[in-house]
Length: 200
Image 1 (cartoon, rainbow, N blue to C red):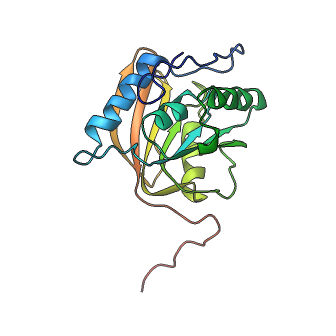
Image 2 (image 1 turned 90 degrees about the horizontal axis):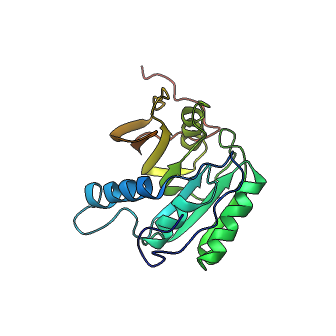
């Protein structure tokens, strides 16, 4: 595994030895970031530039590190597996990007209050586990995403994935066994705020 582009281009990352951790392949990362920079950039501005990034189900941390390499300001790495989170931290230290990183050991479907609202998020849950939609709902409801945030979700090509309410589906791409969906948050709820009463 290597960082594909940016200031850390070519940096070799430590690969997981645990089969439960499945990093996004370099070629899939390249394709995803090409779409982000070339389709979703406004004028010359990349959505990665100065972005506040969330790498959920972070595993090796490769997606968040790729974003930092390409101009993101900072990244929160989240995983519920301490082994995965430690691997992500070692890779961030290898890139000398520790000052731009935060590490959170937490279940992606029960996140609790957000330390910061991300403008760009990556979700790479285990294939076939049905975790993408519940995690997206948690991000939406508990303030982990800024209004209008872009969210990139990797699922297995055979998984049945449908975004929960509050997200617009902007793009989908298939790469071998992986399918990438790019969403935009359009309606963010406050975790404990009651629904507004109907107008009369």
